Image (tube, rainbow, N blue to C red; front, side, top):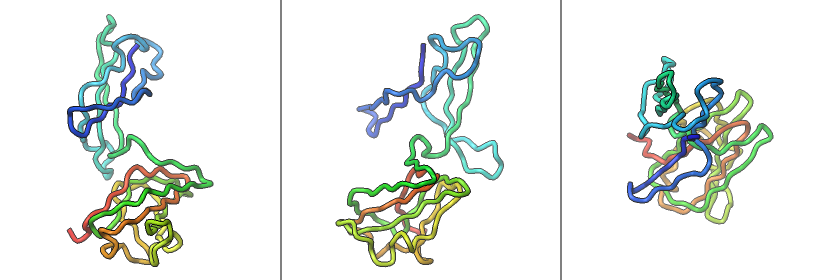
Length: 189
């Protein structure tokens, strides 16, 4: 039998492979669960979404039934941008606090998806874990919805320029949501 595995490299020399299956043979009742089924093709491709106003997505292609007499099939699977893994919390909520980090730029953006009742808030703390004035969780505009690039705002202010280059921690408070990635950027561009 064949499973699609997830493999990454930052330098194209050394690779890491996750032992869990990324793409399974699936629910088909015929011509599945044998060697060569769900065999992933090399690479990912950014493609336009079939939903008219949705952002681009990542597509991967896999062959099915290639070793059967019925003939092979090429199937496209799609994921959200940066959608391989997420920090997920149920409606009762959960938190993640980063290690101290430094950044450049003046805005923080999130790739996140919530339910209608869910949310994500961010608190910026000093290296010792104390909330920085003006950047406490209570002052963070609650983020809900589904967005690849949502700017985080505290008390109407997204500007983090005064904190750039200083060690900070981020505390993410997540309720019935997935946080896929965060990024600091220069919001003046």
